Image (tube, rainbow, N blue to C red; front, side, top):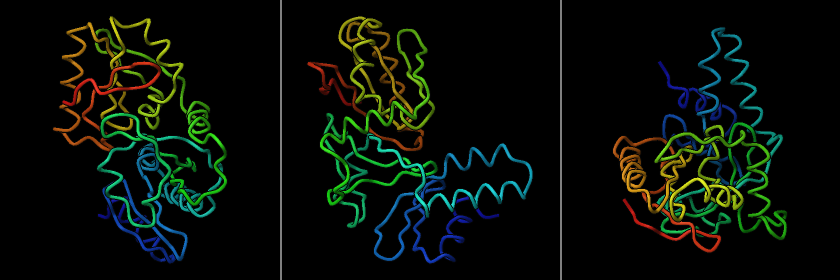
Length: 242
């Protein structure tokens, strides 16, 4: 039986796209002179898992494919990516708009098009004067409300796509400073994981290190960085790398 990535790849190739399967839930597609676009299938896979009717599944896939071609409802957002991810980009996307955060982590501008992200390039002249601030505003507008759980080690959740992006939302960290012992220490080992503890909380620090190791040992999807970051002067500095 074909995987979802193989099935979508076959359809896209029939429609004139060149497609590379990056993983079971990620494709790299291009057509003509439009450049390459990374297509993430995790949201589609989750939707399909809840649909029993074959006809409804086919309709959902077709809607997804139409959204790829129309780029409807695109919102400027900011994602967190690693040095390794930047080095893996094809030549056409090497000039993605980015800004360093700390360690091997970068804020990268993208457009959320509903079922995929497309990345903003330096050549794009429509991103405005302060695109990263606009990207954070976009994240806050479309992410789920932020929720916190946990004790010594806290986890922040906002729907699964933008947890790491919350590193760039300054007001979040002003609030979190009142919930931890000592300076805020944060880690975003994957796109959908954001851990927080205090610099004076030995148990929280130990649990954070263990959580980061698990993400990389078990090869979670969309891994970013092993770095633990300390909040300082309105930004982030490296606390340690696990």
